[in-house]
Image (cartoon, rainbow, N blue to C red; front, top):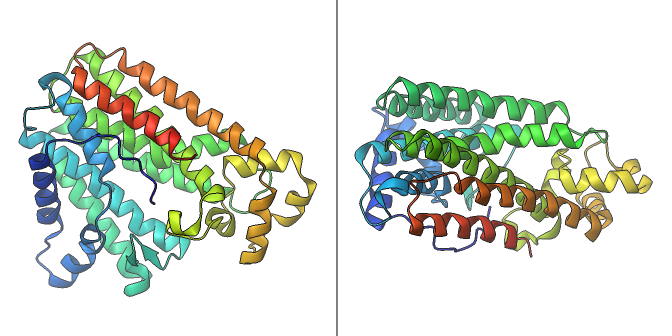
Length: 324
């Protein structure tokens, strides 16, 4: 979605080009049709936040002015391929018609094509990870498992007005925070940073991912369709009751009477209106807690380059402020 702040979290431009080239090579299948569908969202652009995190983690010890190693470029491409593959599957689950301003793969071709091409992207990610060694391959495999766990947990609570805060947080740990943490950890692993720095970068990524998803969910009920690139309240429409809605359910019998089924869009608008500023603020307090923990985690990274630290903390602050 949109609304990602411009906070100067930028790797060297040449490194981003190298990541794009590695991604293009990974989706360039021998079959022309498979290459087209696998590269569909890649060609539509995207923020590349996860590979940027990998690159910034690899700069932790070497500094922000030295080009990343080929291993870091490969790791950055691997985490983005996992993200892209998960988007293909998400669009099937959500019956989404667009993604990144273009028709989704399932809408343009079919659900079967989207599922298989998503699987192909995950396979290519695994292949890249394997080239970096068993430790990286194992980490990425575990992360893909966490993505699945988080998504399945979310599906278990679709249209459930009794969804708890704990199950919500557990779901986003899997479906979002796990890949953020892995993006950072791989960057540290391929750069042989110290164990303390590696763990600090991983914790930073985890808390950044939690903050990112909570803010995303707040924006779903506070931002306009033009800002979001999708209808306001889309999660409510899909039966995904996120943190601000969960909080609002505690205080509103009217809201509880509306939820528990698929709503039409006028009803969705009514639900969004019933989420008060108090519930939004309470949700943002959770995001800020993770923002603080993300920045605190960097204090445990003795090798972290000062410029990289500034960029990473700037990203955390920008994610919180993008909700205002």
